[in-house]
Image (tube, rainbow, N blue to C red; front, side):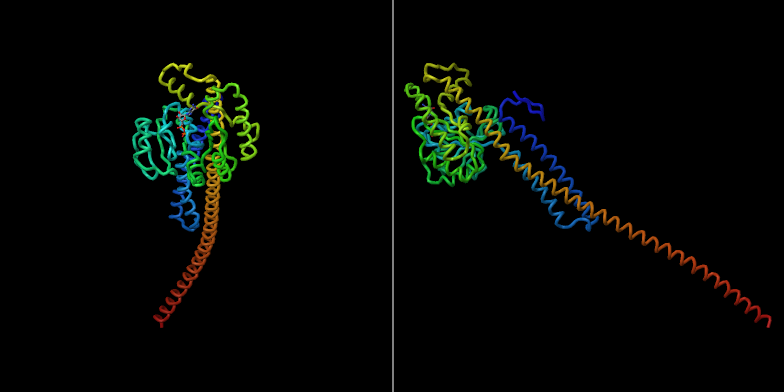
Length: 420
Ligand code: GDP
């Protein structure tokens, strides 16, 4: 496994690069916060003692920077990588999410359709709970059935609404590494695609189109991604042809069907959406069976043996292809999230420190000038004092002489008068 040279910690998944970057940028911002707090406190003191040195605007800017840095620090601790799953109803979106999580977290299957947006993310407390939009109430989730019930019956949910599902981090490495997975209602059930994109997709780092390998890409599915790519520049899109286990029933057409799907998906990404090159498309299009992967992982987690006879021919190859998808996905989301989430913040941090520095420099120069001019004034004043002192000495001496003379005169006159 590669090492991170700055911390010398081992990195076993590309997702951990995001974690490392997050740790580093957070610690940089803690330093910036200390610097800004220290600087603003000093400025307040200086302003009390010597208000001429600081211009009113400068003090206001520095106090504003304190709030700005605090705001960035808060956002940074909450930052995560976000992947959003789209596709027609029943293509297997919830099953793909569950397979990646390694257990049945989201309800799926006949009788349950996801009728709102569901965001699964790591729970800080270790408990499983959900929070509906516009509410702070944590509703405990004991099981998938419970979650399905809460979503279906307890409240009439709007398709645009986002429900947060917080799941214990220790149960799934994706959640531990700060990935949030968003499941959506089928793109075929809504006329409000634009609203969906504005509300839930603008900050997604990766999009996964879960398509059905038993049919071709649908116009509704394509339309959705056309809209996404008008709002986001070069979105990262993966296409999963799910239910590939069904192909085992018709082995004679397997290669031909795969090639046809591959060509169409590549054309869609490269020529229609122009989001990647033909070479890149190879690692963006996969043929998988989410149901099989989920089954295998749940069995493994429970320490049960996998009955391979119950699985369709070619299971191992499909499982490996799913793992390959996960690896490419991890590389892509980590890289993209570091760029979209941290680049902006690190630039803001750089500008902020530069602006603060320039204000402090101005204040310092102004205080230097003021000290200099006060010293000059003092020197002038001292010279004047010296001159006055000399004058005084002179005048006093003259007066003394005069008084002596007058006394002598008076004495002369008095003794003369007495003699007469
Ligand atoms: P969603 O509406 O897109 O979230 O679809 P679901 O995940 O709820 O799946 C719909 C149905 O398809 C469920 O009964 C799943 O068990 C089934 N399903 C999902 N993935 C696969 C797969 O890879 N192969 C097969 N044969 N069935 C699948």
